[in-house]
Length: 425
Image 1 (cartoon, rainbow, N blue to C red):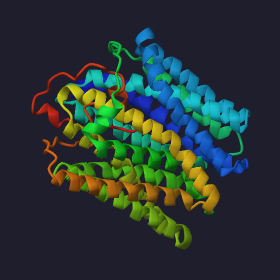
Image 2 (image 1 turned 30 degrees about the horizontal axis):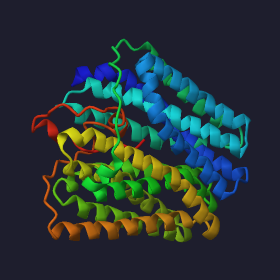
Image 3 (image 1 turned 45 degrees about the vertical axis):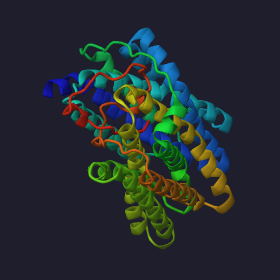
C-alpha cells in the first residue's frame, strides 16, 4: 500500500494544486458575475457552459490521452486551464466567459481522465478502495479549501484570477517531474442509455436529479449567497461548508446503504436535502448559524446522492455490464448538470434567490415520489437482486468508467467490496 501511495504521490500533489484552483475559480466566477451586474439567467448560462464542456471533454480528452500519453496530455490540459482565469480577468464579457467556461470544462475533465486512469492503474483489487479514498479526500478537501482563498483578494481585481491560474500551473510541476511510469492508454466506450434505464430506472432518474441539483448549486450557490446579503468572507464559508459537509458525510451514508435497501436510503437522502434546503432558506432570514449548519447537511445529502444511485445501478447489472453502466450514468449526470444552472437561474430570476433551493426541493420531491413508486413496483413482483457493498470510494470513478468499452476483469468476492461508489466530475 505504501509503495502504491509513493508511486502516485506526485499525482496527489498535482490534484491538490489543481482542485484548489478549481474551487477558488468556480466560486469567483459566480461572485464576479454578480458584481459585474450580469442577470441571473446570464450567470446560469455561463455556468452551464462548463458542464457542456465536460461532456465534450469526455470524448475529446480520451483521444488526446491515447495519442500522446498521460504525462504530455496532463501538461497540455493544465496549460490550457491555466490560461482561462487570465482570459476571464481581462475579457469580461458574458459570451466570452461562456466560451471560456466550456473550454475549461473540456480541459478539466481531460485532467481528471489522466489522473484517475493513472491512479486506477496503480491500485490492485485489494487496495483500490483505499487508494481512491485518499484521492477523493484530497479532491474534496482541496475543493472546499479553495473556497476560502476567495478571502485573500478583491473579486473585482485580477489578483484572484492570477492566483487561480498560478495554482493550475503549479499542478504541472509534480507530474512533469515524476519518475513513475505512465499507464497504457485507455480503450473506448459504448453507451446504451436506454438499456441502462430498463435495468435500473431509479438509478437513472436519481442521477438526473443529482446533476440538476449539484450543478445548480455549484453554479448559482455563490449568487444565492451574495443576493441574501452575505459578505465575501461568509460566501466562502457557505460554499466551503457545503463541500466539506459532503466529504464528511459520504462515509456514514455509504455504511448505512450497505445495510438498508438502497431505495430507502435514496428516499432518506433526498428528504434530507429537502429539509436542509428549507433550513438554508430559514437561516437566510433568521441567522447565519442556522444557515451554516443547514449548509453542512445540504452538502452531505447532495454529494451522497449520485454515488448511491451508481451503487444501486450496479446492484442490477452483471459484471460485463458494469463499466458501460457507470459510463452511461456519467453522461446522464453531465447532461442534467448542463441544464441545472440554466433552470436555477431562470427560477431565481422569477422568484429571487430562494428560487435556487425551491428548484432543488421540487426536484428532490419528484425523486422521492418516483423512488417510492419503485419500492412499490418491486414489491409487486419484480425479481430481487443481489445487493453489492457500497463503499465511499469505487473501484472505478465516473471518469474511468467513461473511458472503457471492455468488461472489467473478474474479481474475487473479497475484491468486490471495493465499492460501487462513483465520484462527481
